[in-house]
Length: 496
Image (cartoon, rainbow, N blue to C red; front, side, top):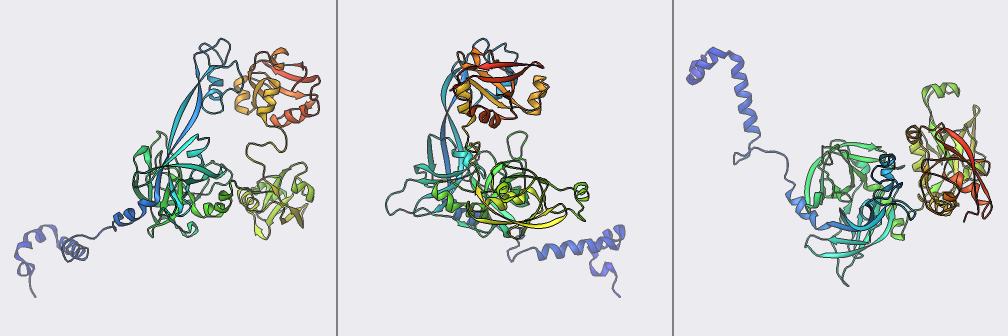
């Protein structure tokens, strides 16, 4: 038998000092180094994304949109937002950016242009259609799209969907000209841990490429009723909004939309809209808007305690908390307390699931609901309605129109606002501002008053207020107001 000194005299010293285990470590390191080396001696690593990025960049665009906003200048005594006003901080959020005061007599307004930066992806080469986020172009007075060749092109909005934060643009192209379009993939096939690459315009740095993995799927972040985000650690920052998230096959799997950040920059948590959602909505976006089905119910989760109280062996379905008056569900006989188990044979396990299923219904189509009522199974057929626009309150006038007639700017009273006001009311309409010379001003209404009744009808929100005033146009209107904990009646003459 050969001794270790005979095998390799130069190793004899270290082996005697460190023991035979050191020999195994040295051999293992040598084998690993050899197996990870190429013929040229270079260590193999992750594949380069350079070729993929170079191929995909022409299909990604930078978007710049201009919006005209009004901001308060100076101050007027007694007007919210003015120096020395004790209500200043409380009312500040109602007088900043878009949707400021709705009546003359507020802070002097100075129009200015605000520029938003974002990204987009070309989805139709012949028509010059670009998909992006709604918040990148909403209320824009001018939209400019810049392509890889640095050409700046005017763009117009084809269709928008605020609920999913998607928008479709059409850029100006010459006759016969085509733009390189992306290939849309299948976001349902994505798995947590898959590699993805983002291309966009973060902080105005055009066509920046970042990479990471899919961190999670189906994230709900409170952005809207149809949250179903892909979470990724690929670096996403302001300006990436509307840009594509690619898989390693070069297919778009998501539209980058939001980040979770305490300082405004990337901390490794970004969110993208699944491309399958965009594909489903694209035909409607081409027509200008998205129309969704509507059931007319408010639903809530069934927890373990509730399931036991309902006599269920396990948690299942969703509970109907309220039914909209004259809505599709009400007309079909759905009642509060019903347990909805499925819609058109598709099992319902959570409120968000039913909302998505209902949204996919075509208004006017028939839908079958399997329910449990007082322990008995039942199937109900209803005709789906059309989901009201986000800015509409059923078929009644908007709160802006109500405000103009009364001469106030009002908002629904929330628990937080009620605490700050010190009011005993938990529901109502809080007055944010009063237009000088208006019917409300003549009646003595003030900022901070809470309207809790109108024409002897309870006012829980702006919709109730609108309805209470609808049948009393041009007549005396009786309001019950709470001010600093005390209630009193006020008459407002001839509204409208």
